[in-house]
Length: 377
Image (cartoon, rainbow, N blue to C red; front, side):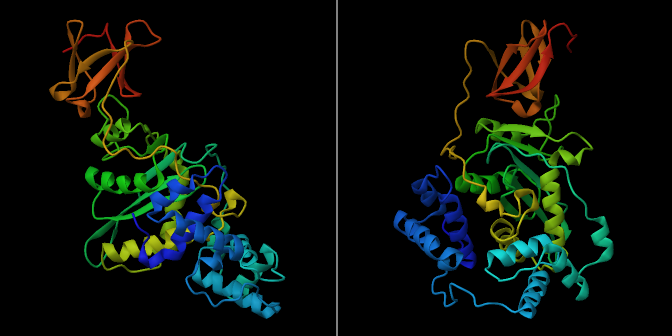
């Protein structure tokens, strides 16, 4: 997947931040970003020498800024806020420090500047509060995925699909989709897996196309992910906090993009999403990351997307059965129900830690159980 022409500098920035991380496979990154090794090392060297400014093709901006006056800093504060209307004092201060401004005031002073210019809504300020944060220990241990609520365009409706890395808060994809169909999600994920590799686990909401791991809740999308070696999980019904980071991401997406624009069609939405994703990953300070950016903590998975979906195999500890129509299997002279989405697939039956209860295994994941003592019909 070659670099997008409209955001080539941000693609270079994403590349070098990942390539500079300890243990990074630079040759593999070049392949995933669709560039030659020579070009990859070129941008790495320019970034080491000049920082982010070195990633522009013919930048005429000076490497060092002259001393700023207080008035200049105040103007810079206002400019950042007008560009990113949901950012507060801490984020703006981190950005100004990163850009090399001298005498950057404290976050509280910056908030005072915003109030003087009428750029802080008192009600929104009162509603803002701290969150209790939990995160996985490493990138790609868990990705969160969901559709944000759809919204109207001049032509049709947009269904934003978001995929977020739990550890780094790195936005892997924001897709302007015309529907929430399984094939639409698979097409988007195929592109994401090609760039960033496969996660160990993904969590998603309940309902179509996500499903749930109840008896009849497995979906074709779940089966596809499990066959790729991705463990699938779902949020508890009526508990959106299970997907808390993605829910918070949706709020920022809504405030900073969707509510700030009127959109004509899906292409228009996608351009806005791509631009904001670059800002979110490469520029927007994240408080949970110590005001660093998500790209500084993310690196692609070592597990590449396979060219073909692997065959399904089980060891000798499993009794293998092929799932028939309506999700039925024959086992020890009885007929049992398993998830209908497994129709045509081989499954493995394995003794659980309870007598008479068999775990139903699909590839590497337990998806259901059957009770050998229960009546069947």
